[in-house]
Length: 430
View 1 (cartoon, rainbow, N blue to C red):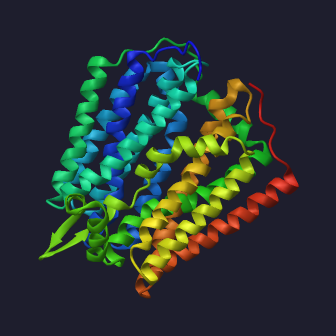
View 2 (view 1 turned 45 degrees about the vertical axis):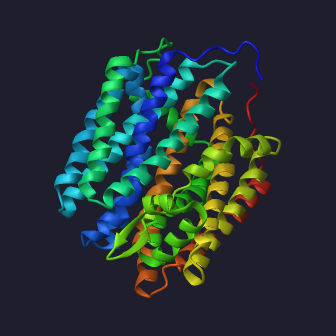
């Protein structure tokens, strides 16, 4: 334990509180959206296009929104993100046309992209060497608390009506606006004054490193693509392809009728689990992330990452088994996916920040956002719109997880070969 750890200022806790609310709204909407979209009668091919563009926007806008926060201040850009969020969610409530829904979701993605780097940026500014690890650990926990409660609460509300769910998300954004306006005080920091033009030039410099560019593309194609495919498809898979009544009974037998009823809906006298309420990994991450990080910090990054991919592939295998045999395998599948995520995601992003000189760590992480955006885009247009549509039509939607598992196993081989022949990157010293 670090002695004389600096206390966190009030703005640290304020920014983390709005992070919970934003992730509550974001994941509450996103996890249930495939189910909502299907209830309106739209095709899965159209869903995949919206998902892909949504994720691409969500993860490429942060590359540049940080520049505006540097110029105008975190608080002003936070408020702008809320002003983009609120009408987008309200549009989702009032429109049922494909163009209106697509516009609403892409606008939500744009607002989320503006917001995404601002709280982590605040945490980075107000922490120091004595409390940084704890500060970012708290931040990561807040992300997962919001991402867990969002699908749970909005899933329960949409069992009454979808409008209720989206109104709850809008209320969360309105509350964020008030909290930020009244209590968020701009933290003191050195302003770098980097223009967008310079950011483009610097990013071009980072991506001109062919080895680094190839590594980012491999991550985008073989980690972020299957990672986002899980979040795109799992809720819909549970809702439409598994025996929801049997899953309800499984939960009831283990956790009791009260929790099972909260996670389910009555369909003409039969209670069935709501897909988005159990299809996320947040609770597992909250419970185990610190323990997993503590274990794997003892091992080198790339071998740890490859092992995490192996766990992820096993998770996909059990998701497929849930559709082939007994639906309760879905719980083990989600658990393993969560462990794969905990091993892979924080570690590889930390690794990338240490590849750059200290003054360019943000630039390299900005480049990593591009890899995440590419993987997210392809997850929608490739796996949702192509593979999942095909397997749905042939009556075997569970096969999508076998394809994803094979995809991850191929990624393990490619990353191993890349590391073997190209060599590991040299991480910077502290």
